Length: 156
Ligand SMILES: [Zn+2]
Image (cartoon, rainbow, N blue to C red; front, side, top):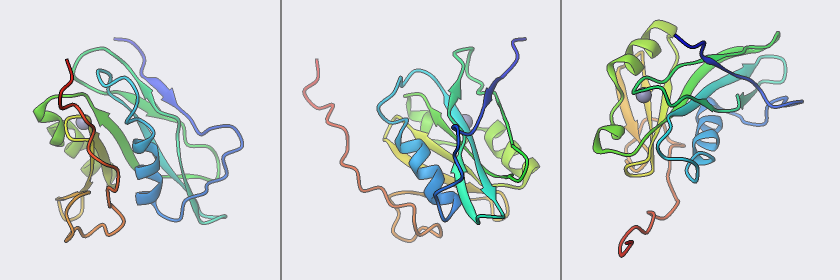
C-alpha cells in the first residue's frame, strides 16, 4: 500500500480564520475549480495561542474510492476538523461510512465538498447531524453557499 500523502500548513501560515467552519469553507471553496475526479482534502488546525484556525494544503490520491491523507500537526496546533472533496457522482453528496467512522473516532467535525452539486456539508460527530450549506435552518450558521450553481446546461 502506498504511504498516504502528508497534508501540511502553508509556509508561515499562522491562522486567519475565526472558526473551523470558515476555514473549512475556504479550503473547500478553493477545490471547486480543480480536478473533479480526484478526492482531495486535509485538516483544519487550531492555534490556541492566536485563537485562529488554518487549513492544511489539500492532498489527494487517485487510488480508488478511498481518500487517505495524513495531516501534519505542527507544535502549538491542534487538529480541529477534517475536510475533503467528493468526486462527481450522485453519491458524492453523502458522507461515506468511513468518513463518519473517522469523524467519530477523532471526535471532530468533518466537511465535504460534493462536486455533484458544489455544496459544502458538515458532519457533527456529537449529534450525528449532517448540515448542508443551502439549508437555512442549518445548525452551522456560517455554512452558507452564495456561489451560483455551475452552468453545465448546454455543455457538449
Ligand atoms: Zn468522503
